[in-house]
Length: 431
Length: 85
Image (cartoon, rainbow over all chains, first blue to last red; front, side):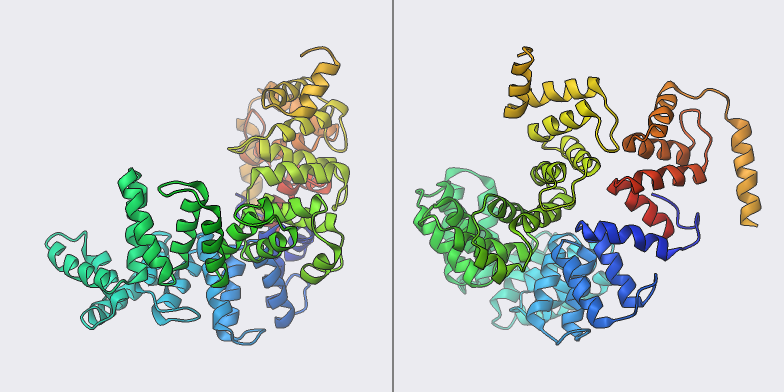
């Protein structure tokens, strides 16, 4: 927003503000501080091991650039040991964030089987995404990939056959050739092929299409495709297209979680959280949600924070998985991760934390800022409105008293069925 | 040279801006001076763009952003940091 030529680079001044933002877990500021440490600028001492730790913190908080950097660090062994599985994991997380470099690097992983099984369809998909997001080298790589896919499709590689079908199906005059590869891949029961075909069928939405999706996902799930296990599990959990069966859903989510899928771990954690398809178990819920949280799933951050806030996590678990701070402090940390990543429900919660000084330093300004962000989001929450109303009513901290704003926010909150607002309005007799 | 350019630009800006400061801007100035962080943030944007009858004044824009940042407003911290990076 501000042109960089305006004030000559004064990184020390920038670092002062980034440090405060970092202390409040804003991932992009955390990435900048990690950069300063990596480069030895802005008054920071150059330290590759410290930089690695800081990139790791920023990546966990949701910075796409940090996630990609971390993938590179694990792939090349910068500041840490080489670990291809970790490299793949961080490229995957960064790609889900829409980071174009991570998308490109993930495509290379799928292509060469770095930290994962070779998956030509996945490679095509992510090279395409990186190209769309403007990363030029992607296109050239894709040309090489296409040549390789066509070569392996003519040998007995079912994944390459499905990838060949995937590339050729929309090219005029190639439909016949595409169908030839399609038939081969489906005949070989290729899990990726069945997973993609099931997804196509699912979005059609008719009862027959849903039934067909379930059938194909079953085949892919048995073949070890974690996406299929999760989607079929979701069908059983909701009873959409199949007879509702929460125990079956639980089994499928568990299968995916055991294969290392973060989404599988999240769904499994939520089954334990709510006690669906299994007995309610806060300990297991926390442990699975933590796996998903470490893969930067915003919802996992939120539900971990609620568990910590409600005192549903034992002290020994906190020490084992988080560290030596209090449950309130960790709750605030996870609410902040989710809030900076634009989750309105978390913004309403962290606003309350700042208002009461729960797990963070008390600040009416910050409470107002996050409540305001929540109210202006797509999911404005009544609780944020009544909190902001309270701040305007009293005129606290750096927010001036404004009765008009306080009144209109309270009315709006009551319309959203916020208990506190309804009580406040009843007390003054205006409801 | 850049400094000379900046001075020239601000002179022109000062000359072209009439005395028509909008009511909204006047309210913001009053509130910002009374210490309201949100007014400080909004006023900073007006000075940065030279909108609502206020002159384009990047020094004032930065000064108000810094005030809001010092009071703890994250958005202003981000803006101030980005200027200096």
